[in-house]
Length: 301
Image 1 (cartoon, helix red, strand yellow):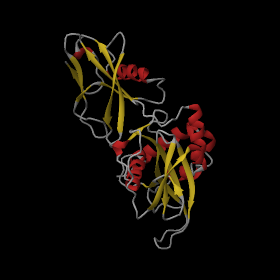
Image 2 (cartoon, rainbow, N blue to C red; image 1 turned 60 degrees about the horizontal axis):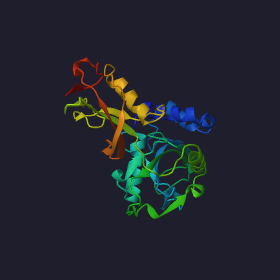
Image 3 (cartoon, one colour; image 1 turned 180 degrees about the vertical axis):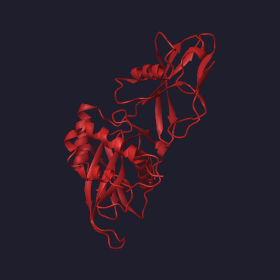
Image 4 (cartoon, one colour; image 1 turned 90 degrees about the horizontal axis):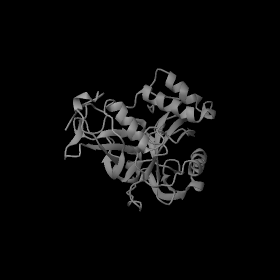
């Protein structure tokens, strides 16, 4: 099933908290969310939601495709289908149109899972499809390439006529271009993959390691698997050290360690197939797992 209205509204309001001056421009989107109709359905008029994947390489270039339907040079994207989230819709559309695999991409620490831009643009009537003129409310999500060189593209020839990598200053969308130029200066957006999750390898100094049995729930990474304590970076985290300490406090408030030491960076895979760089820390602790006040799952040596 498509993303829920609750998920879309939460994503939109968080975006407007960062860009309050855009509330008036997004009035049509907010109206669609207040209506009784599915805001992601192509049949919902006068406007509905689409999602785009903004892929950045190590040279600070953004992937654009030639869109056969409009003749325009755009970032890859399209309509929402049975996607778990808006980000998942953007990832699927981007991969379908370019041939890039989800595992070739990773989230950015600057935006994590939040849209960099929500653009409103007019779509001309298409008599062949029986579609009147309408608007797209386009949620745009940023991904970094995991490799130093872009992978070979396998374009969806039915919809895509070609591809180009454009510098931030040459990005075709004015709203997206402005966001990138600001993020490059203010947030250090540079196309370099960085860890966006933190986990902690806890040992007792005698060869035993504390593992966490994750809950068997849909929608989480590695359900029902023994794993390290930890989780994803959140917007309020100052750094990954903060992420690690916060996750330990939230997951096991009774587990008190003296310090955390950076150990290694590993690559995990999200439930959407994205590569997720994880900063692993080590800590020494020899207490009773049953006394840590675990808030989810179970622990044991």
